[in-house]
Every structure is written in C-alpha cells, then in structure tokens.
Image (cartoon, rainbow, N blue to C red):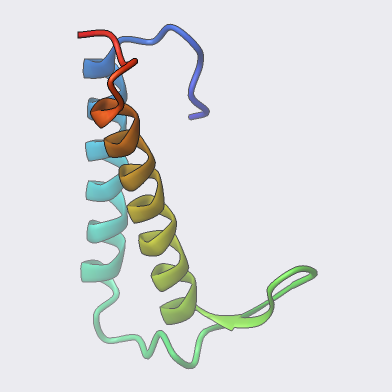
Length: 79
C-alpha cells in the first residue's frame, strides 16, 4: 500500500509492522532455499539475487528511518 498524505502515524506504523512481518514470514517459510541462487533481472539494478534484494530493502528502510529521525530532531518540527 502506498502512503497517502494525512494518514495517522499509528496507521503508518501498523502498515510498516505488517509489511515487515510478512517479509519475515516469507523468509522463514522458505529457509531451505538458497537466496543467493534465486536471481532476478532488473533494467536498473541488473542481475540481482534475493539476498541482495533483501539487503537493498533493509538499507532503504533504514534510510527512511534516518530521514524521519532528522525531521523529528529539527527545531522547526511541530511539538
């Protein structure tokens, strides 16, 4: 689900927790697979395996978390 302006923070947190839970469940339910051997071709990223894709997703999420933290720490952020 794509974020929409004006959605309550609680709803966004719930969506994020659900997404992380689904990703974790997918990984755990396929633990016997070799994620390094499962490969996808993408026009931008090129040949990428599932392990690399999961790393990209994790880094992407950490980047967003850092962006949100910087916004919250800014003196202009409403309190």
